[in-house]
Image (cartoon, rainbow, N blue to C red; front, side):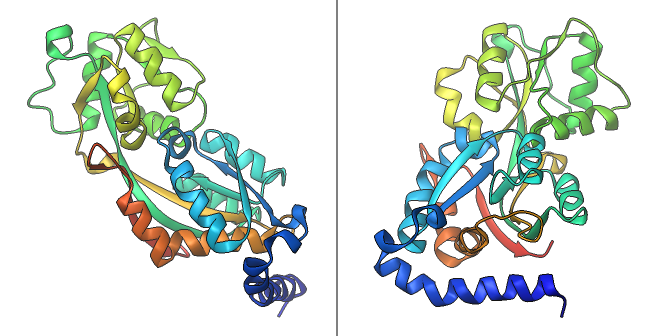
Length: 281
């Protein structure tokens, strides 16, 4: 066993020994030790999921969790710098590279939803997408007609998925019809609504914001729009992070209560995320 493995194992044992005492005596714990910082995607923040889950996580673990909402690319960058203890993101290839480079450990897939394309309705002058069965066809049609499309343009998981779809369509979007705004999902949806444009969004944020939007879902259901979320700790061998607090969050999200609460999170009766905890993927 290497020194780093011994160190991580010792930290885990320490947490297991202290956790019951911390739950009974949270005020006695070192305040700095109890604070755990999470870099999370804007979609989990904008949808209200983190505000729904974290009070229960804190009650059950004795730790205090603070979130920094950012696109996946930025969240991983913050993790590389050691400025947070945990990252919660949704871009598998970037996550695996993060782990491969030694910045992340204990990567655990814990929930999913899907992406949808929203835009103006037919009545509002939108394109007729009927008969199209793939998101690639939709993107090709948007470019062929050069109708307004708003891109997050922020290196987020959603932006990465959008660029992947353009690549599958064999094109690079360019021109005045394509607007990169460098914003989170909520703001991007707002801008798209104001412009009467199309955009790609995660379903969770859309459901949370749709009542304030003039847009509607114009395409959904393609398997290419599957959207997996993962959580992982920043490598404690690289940075002085709160590894027990990070492990506690990962265990809670992938445990019975966390998985149940994720499935129970709804807006107007519609489920926003689906639990599917799997470690080591």
